[in-house]
Length: 220
Image: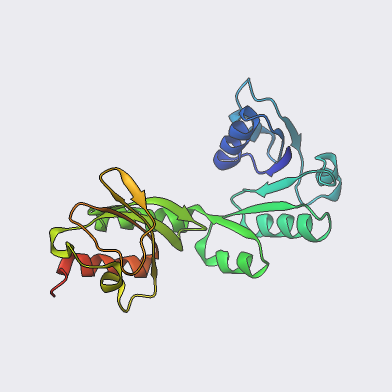
């Protein structure tokens, strides 16, 4: 598949290298010619030096035929405008936008753009690692609004059910329960055992509430 990457900074260059090595046809666009120096000698894609807001530059990059576009510059405004044009004018099927300033994220989402906010996600991930030492994140969706966590069931919850554990908490759903190396799909009546590995899909707030219940114990 062919893709256009707008911005050859650290994120754009790494993305271009990864996708090129995975066999995709990549065209990297940047207004700063020296930015292409981040690309290694074995980079197999093309580069175009020019302003991404220019219709001629985008068409030279093949935007009329491209399958997807990633706008990953450090300018949220530029990313949003290029992505909006790609979707509304050129009907590019898949568009992903980097969000640099979290305060601009909601503007991008208002436009209906698929947004990756490394700043917001990174801050949340650091907070989780600092505060949730008894659990770990195994998957993050979107920008971390919903994640899948893995927790170990403590002795205080042995023999109790998922229904009892999640009572009053609308921010969590069970995903899988692993016991003695075998995984099952738990339901509300599933009885928990000490040492079970429970995977739950949760918002950050939902997981905080679940974690608090686990720490307090079933009888608290």
